[in-house]
Amino acid sequence: MNFHEVLFPLDVALHARGGPERRTDVVLTGSGREERNQRWSRSRRRWDAGYGVKSLSAIASVVEFFEERRGRLYGFRWRDRVDCKSCAPNLAPTPLDQALGTGDGAVREFQLVKRYGASFAPYSREVVKPVAGSVRVAVAGVEAASSRYALDASTGRILFAATHTPPPGAAVTAGFVFDAPVRFDTDYLEIDLAAFEAGDIPKIPLVEIIP
Image (tube, rainbow, N blue to C red; front, side):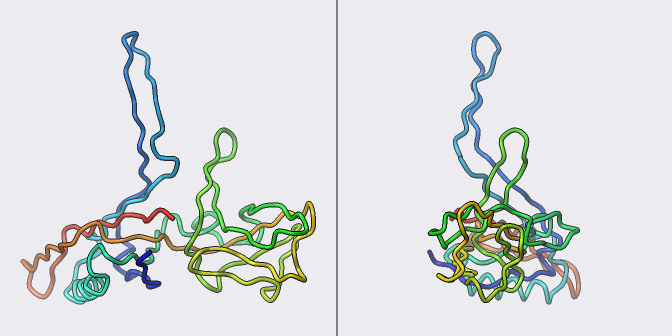
């Protein structure tokens, strides 16, 4: 996948608008009842970062970022300030936040995930772009030293050392900060310089890249 491990300017991302999108077919039957079919098994997030561009310096940084990504060609990291942690956005991640799996004495690799909901139909989202240095892992409720595992920050996979393979029945959990893999959803930026010493880019559409 054409992807650059670089983060979109945070000062611009702070004022973005957007969120998760799903695709559902709804058919109205002759009796007035509905038949609903889920076309996407995963949600896909979209944002518009244009709301965060209010100065010439911000415009310059976005244009530079856009050109280096070649428009829609290369993906990059995006920090969704509403949903960028394994816990609530106002809390600090703990190693017990998210369940990754259960040890069997042989499996050493675990994928970071974040679950949404609990009672009816929880949704699991793969976390493939964790922030290096933010990941905390626990085995059977006890935090593991970082020397006992390796993190691939470009895929979100944790690999335990052979001598520290989670034993049978041990719950593997983790807490982390993460970015979303995205790309520009346009090959054209329309820049408005109507105001003196200021300006804006009305629309900077971004779309999540599904791993």
